[in-house]
Image (cartoon, rainbow, N blue to C red):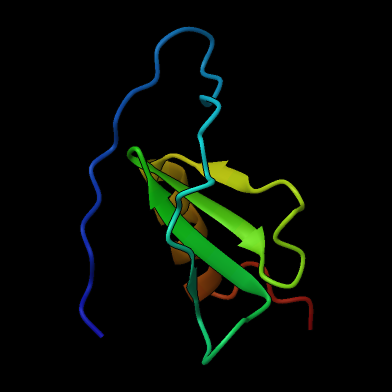
Length: 81
């Protein structure tokens, strides 16, 4: 699988993430069909939601936060075993 490159876009103000309109987002699943986690790329941010409960709130990541999350997951940072 090829590595992807993201560009961090600094936020203005207090560092809060903007309210994004996710109604037209193209959600992607990691599995065939609906998986537990889906992501969408919207306005320079990455949104992540529970695929079986799409009406629940989504988590919003900056590109830098997403990169740290993915690298941490690859390194087993979140393994509970």
